[in-house]
Each structure stands twice: as structure tokens, then as C-alpha cells.
Image 1 (spheres, rainbow, N blue to C red):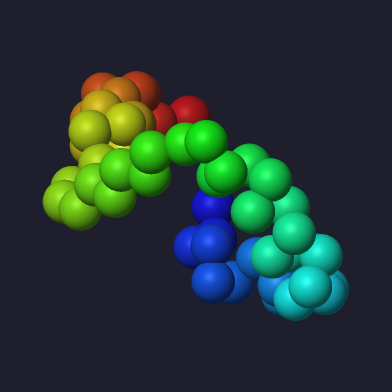
Image 2 (cartoon, helix red, strand yellow):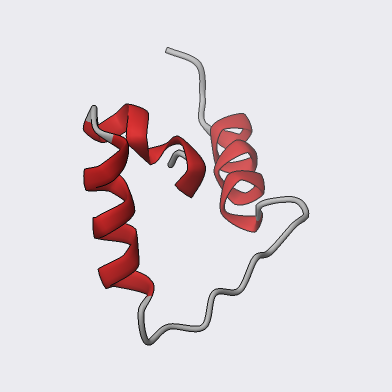
Length: 53
């Protein structure tokens, strides 16, 4: 998932991306989490456990 400052490139229009983010985040609390991804860690562990074909 691209960072919010890269959404202009995803939508092809900076103004459109800004408007979408403004409406999504108007009444939200944004929590930025830094650190290792537990989802990715668990997926990598599952891949290592899978037998090779």
C-alpha cells in the first residue's frame, strides 16, 4: 500500500488524491505504526514450513 503522499501517482491526479484523503480522514485519528510487520513475519514463517514442489 503506497504512503498517502504517493496516492497522487496512484490516482494520476494530486487534487483527486487530496480530496479523497481529506474525506476519508476528516473525522479519523491517524495512528502511524513503525516497526516490523507481524503479518509479513507470519507469512514468511509459513512459506518456510511449506514443502517444496
